[in-house]
Image 1: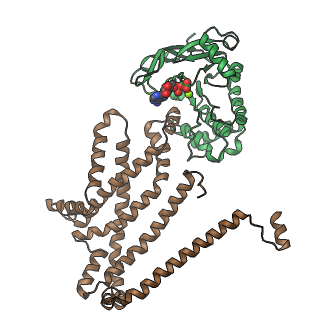
Image 2: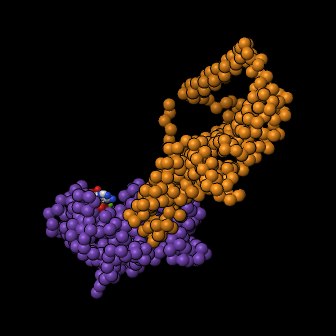
Length: 244
Length: 289
Ligand SMILES: Nc1ncnc2c1ncn2[C@@H]1O[C@H](COP(=O)(O)OP(=O)(O)O)[C@@H](O)[C@H]1O
Ligand SMILES: [Mg+2]
């Protein structure tokens, strides 16, 4: 079967700093893959390449077998299908929660304001934020802001959702409510690619775990394989460091 | 609860030593401010009238009859300043926004536009306003354009709008630059085009941040409008000059200054207030002292 997302020999540098080296990775439809690896190993860059926030230097990124990284391709239709949630939430501070969610629905998908608003309310309801619809982001806790950011991405009904260390900027007691949202998404048919430092969570939620080391895949396998009996010395070292 | 208790027993809430100390400090600085203002005022009121030529200055600058006589004419003439201000302001904002957007464009193909916009702001900010008003205000009508498009009033206003749009464009640009890149990333990741991102996400945040400096520029504009008089139109400054010559008295200039102040001071206070508010909103908690 054609993978949902496929990276084929992707390379990416910033100046002389090579961040992704000939990296290949296939993710099946509905699969949950976690990216783990040291800070600076290229997790964020990889995710940004998948929804075309970065141009790759070499190789190809495919969505349903279609080369989305081809030169001169309009990125906007791709971004409708591939959502991303950032470490720092990036909500629009000058818009209410509801407007944050409906902006792209109306401007990109062409929905009417009423339809968009109903859709936003349904999602807010589903994730326990119904009463926050008309509040502005700075009146929300970090956990609530990140949940809104996830809802904003989900509202576009993406086929693929990229999550970039979405709990790293949160106080420990707020991590749980955000991870609960992600747990709810698993099995809904959406394909999830998750960069994370939460090893316990990666182990629990992932179909496969991918360990990145300086821009390439050092090891990939089921959580039991990667966490239980890592084959690569670098994986073992990394896991020793983060579990201590 | 605690407050009710104090009221019932008739006691003021007890101040801590620190609160007591800070209260004393506040009283002390209020006293110093009041005392020094008083000293300066007395000095002015006592010494200025004792200057050898005070009588003559008083007559030629502060002639009460002259004030009453000139005031209606000057207010009438001030209307022209208000009108010039009213039609140049929207033109300045529109032009400035276009230039700022041109300078912020990112596509490599638009390099000539960026360069042009940069050159425009450099020239406009580099030439004295008055010189530009002379050049455009006399130069363009001098080309022999037909009425009514040859009026110095029109081209003086255009010159003013051109100069100011250079400054205001820089203010807009600074505002646009101050919006964090992650905001664009978020908008683009949702599929918004770069134009939609600018319009719905970047500009609204940018403009909110630059309201105080924009008002600052408006205060300056309000005064610089008078420079258009130098190429002909009879607005307040010129009317004051006419009155001065006719009555051989400088009082009309003082009246004109007061009329300007009656508009610019409220605007300046508002600007300051908005600055302070913006500062409080964005610069975090103040250090104690
Ligand atoms: N926009 C950029 N410009 C220059 N260097 C960058 C940029 N983004 C990331 N990098 C560099 O790429 C490397 C990988 O970063 P990143 O993908 O953020 O890693 P991770 O998310 O795994 O911590 C780092 O060395 C970082 O400094
Ligand atoms: Mg990262």
